[in-house]
Length: 325
Image (cartoon, rainbow, N blue to C red; front, top):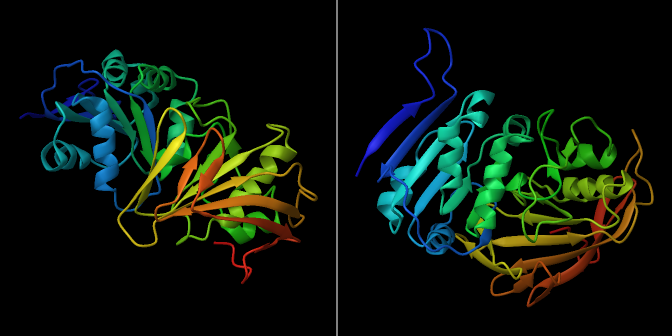
């Protein structure tokens, strides 16, 4: 077992290093047979069985965690507690120079499993988009090998991204003004299998994010980014394991493990600056318990189907009590 820290350089006093690198296990590269898949985790406590799913798909190779803040806490947990990997390595990006460092890029490309930790997704979008890091993530996915993300890491896995460039946005504020500056969306970042036309959101029910996800979808269609858009909301302590054929398996630590799959019906009725949103009949599939879903066919079994409508910025549903969740 080995724990080491490697930095881009030995900077002068007061200067930042470009990245931090930590490893538990063998720091040398190993090549194992891998299989593809995506892990969409909703934040808060990580789900052990979901991470084991990624480890299984890694073939026991090198599990790499990338992030722009935080610590190397994943390393001992994955390597020692979960086990089954040759190493767990964490790269913390400190400055944009790290995005062009060959050591960093080779570590990512050599991953048999790649996981994007939580934090602030604007760090990821502003630092990684359009750089070789973006290409390295695609390289891992194309092996194919599993790629996953939690919280902010989940937020960047879709074709469309809530970038949080101007901090977070609450559902009520988004619904009352879909062009609120905090409804900051990005595209042309990652392009991952089964995630075309998608936008994701995390911490879903505790932070009441249904209204803002509906608003994100309205903006994507209104702004001409897509004729049809889809949204995935994942609750805390819950993760969705997506197979290459689109089949979704839910893992959760709690009884309220749930995910929501939204699809737009066409353009919104009213989506304007400083005007409450009106968007009728957005379809929803609520997945919980033993329910199933497939991202490719956009169909499931055993879940709950209903529709949401925003009228003058107020969200209601066709559920018997009008609840949106």
